[in-house]
Length: 303
Image (cartoon, rainbow, N blue to C red; front, top):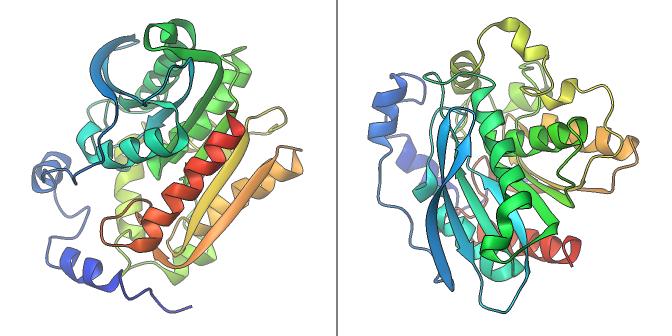
C-alpha cells in the first residue's frame, strides 16, 4: 500500500530538522521540546514521585470519571530510551484513560546515556509494582493491571512482563505494545526496506541502541531485547501494533508470533500506509482510530 496521504506532510515537516542522531542527546531533547499536543480532559490528574532503584520516579496519574475501583494501565513513553517525557505522552494517556475507563500511570523513567541499561527497565518495573501494591491510593484494582508503551516504551512494557514473570509478580493482565523494539537486529526486511525516509531510520536506531546499552553483551539480555527470552509461556495476553513503513515492523510481528507459539493470547495488527510514531499522531485519522481500538482491547482484557 502507498504511504498514507496524511503522513506525507508530517514527513516533509520533519525533513526540515537535523537528522535524528546527528546531534548530542541533550541537543536533540532541546530541539524537540515543543508544546505538548492538547489532550482531552480527564476527571483528575496528579503528578507523584514513586520510590525507585535510582531515587524518586516522576509519574503522572490519570483517573477517569466513575466510582472504581478501576483497572490500571502503566504506560511507558517512546523515544529510544534517550528522548521523551510525560508531556509528550500526555494526549495519548488522556485518550486511553477516557476510552478504556482505566487509571493510567505514565512513567518518567531515567533516560540514557546518563542512565544506561537496565535503569529504564528497573524504573518501569518499580512503578508497575507500586501500582499493584499501593494503587489503592488511586482506587486501582490490583488484580486488573496492564502495561503498555510505544516504540522503546513498547520494549519496556514487554520487558516488565518478563520481569514480573521471573520475579513472581505482580500478575499482569495485558500488554499493549505499539511498534515495540524487541531485538537489536538490523538485518530484517523492514529495516532494509525502510532504512531511511520514514521518520525513524536505521541510523537513528543504531544511535539509540548505542546510547542505551553498556556493551554488546547487553543486546543478548532479554531485559534489553525481549526477543532473546527463551521461554515466553505464561506472559500476559498482548496486542501488538505495527506500521508498514517502519524499520521495527518485522521484529514487532516476530515477537507476536513467539508469544502465540508459547500459547499466549496475542493479536498482531499491521497498519498499512503508516509510519513509526503514528499511534495517536496529531493530524492522522488512523492514529486516533488505533488508540480507540487499543482502548477497546484494554477495556475487554481488564473487564
